[in-house]
Amino acid sequence: MNIILFFWNLIKPKNWLILLSMIINVGICVALAAYVSYLFGLENRYILYISLGVVGLYALLEIIMLTPIGEAVLRSKMKMKPLPETSFVYSVFETVRARTESFNKWLSPRVKLYYTPTNDVNAFALGSRTVCVTSGLTYLPPSQIEGILAHEFGHINYYDSYVSVVARHGNLLFYIAVVLVTQFISLFAFVFDTAISKRFGNAYFFRLAVNFVGNMLITLVSLISGVLFCARSRIVEYKADAFAAKIGEGRNLRDGLITISGGGAPAKKTSLYEKMMGTHPPTNKRIEKLNALIGYGV
Image (cartoon, rainbow, N blue to C red):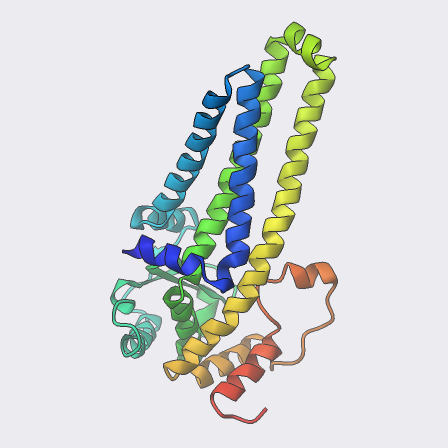
């Protein structure tokens, strides 16, 4: 059911940028598989079968990442630990959970709280079951932590964290595929030096060209995927803020943002690249929108 709901949400306009990024990843992986097949002189039908196999493998691995198993693997990789129930943050989390139940009864029982021992003041959602806080966040007043956790529940409610997991994992699969293929072609060219030289000219320069193209593909797709991912991320931040306000935590979230940003002052001027690669809108803009949502004058 989760997977069906995920794909239903994936085709919504807010996620089109991520969908485009995934299509680019799959398209290039298929092209690489077809090219390797061509090097071996395979018939067109076999090239088609291999290309379909690549698409199927990509889809299977992505679906695995949508399961509790995939989420557990990511938690382990990010060194998350369950937050002890004796922590005051856990009781704050339960308060937000109770508020969320009035809006989405399916959502809250599945979500668990974890922490990472870092001094950064941050919280984030992962997949459909995980909210993680940093040690630095625990120094905020409980009411402000409530607001920030409500924002993270919003990401899970709208499947934002699900989509993020799939997008990042898809990029990783793409990088691995490019590296493996370029190294394989280079090895193939080294072993069959004479045959490659007859077909493509100097085998040494052929290997250099293959590695260069592979590195360029990784760099280019990393940039494109990064821009698309960050643009989509900035959009959904406002939706998660609105969710917090909807369950009555808008004021607490606003106060938390003011504390974290040092007063909610306008952001310093940034370069075009920094704007494009920023995952969050300016904090003062978020505060303005929250003030409007809770009926508090700016």
